Length: 446
Image 1 (tube, rainbow, N blue to C red):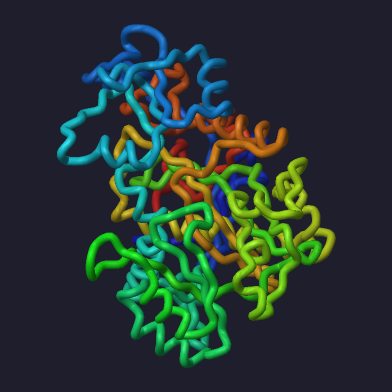
Image 2: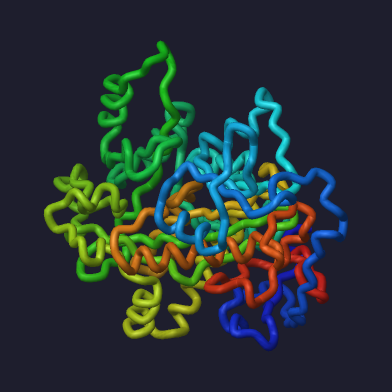
């Protein structure tokens, strides 16, 4: 049963002991200590029965993105470029489109035991905006139906522990329901986003129903009587500001398996700042330099700074918050963020195809409001590995290196029969997020 017990997890004799997710107890409060003595399954154990190119020599890579942080990591490991035409590759950092084609039932491709790629077949259950909201809503209802204390509501009917996404509807399907909510809060601001796009494309803010009607009337469509799905969410109009500017967090989460859930959070995330000071005035609703933190948008602003790229290391944010709000409050905020991520992953656990050839690095976008409450905005399937500053390059190079260290067996050769339980030394800047059966002390549900 999900969350049948909640525990504090610590790994002994490890530099990661203080950074592993600390989970607060709700009903019972034993502390479970897990001895970290992972024993990866040797390549010969279980025997790879469908050997591919790795059995013939050096590791061969493919990538749809010719980016420095990827290629430099491949080269320093002595990997060589493979071929997509004859399937002569071991590691493929592909686009979501290529992954979709590869796993298409019409394709008939069968991956070898020494071939791995960077997307799960149904990653869109988490990374497409409308599916993410749908799955989280279903997850909350399922927990509530089971009587889980995690789904507790307050006197106003809001979830106490699961209120981490703004009120959201799908358009055009939920238009009538949205209108009812709008009329309850006629002064609220809403943000509309195309469900399947990224980098701030197609996003705009509204505060009148007439604006939606105009959008629906003017929106072009190549197919008669159909329209792309949009999500419309209550705009977080009270964001925490630093220097008067709005920002959000970009956090990196690695998932190597959904069943059982094996996930890690990277320590070196960053804040993305708007270039113009925040103003909630209705006269500024169209000014995306005030409201959207996407670098793809902000880099076109007059105030954009090439030297720092409008980014701030996560460590700087933590230090700032500790100085302005105290360490206890800051620790609680980041513990809430970790919980938020765990819940979002568990919401798709039963609908995600957990193919053993796959792993995924997700880019989580989170906004913090003035009450230091984190809100999940969206999850990106292909967070950018391009860099805008030297620090950005160093961080993303480290991210890819640490990711490879975790997803590969100790001998460095992809092998789907490996149990995906890396040693603590392999984690690098990753911290374990959630608990999974990776050690001698076996714990699976929490």
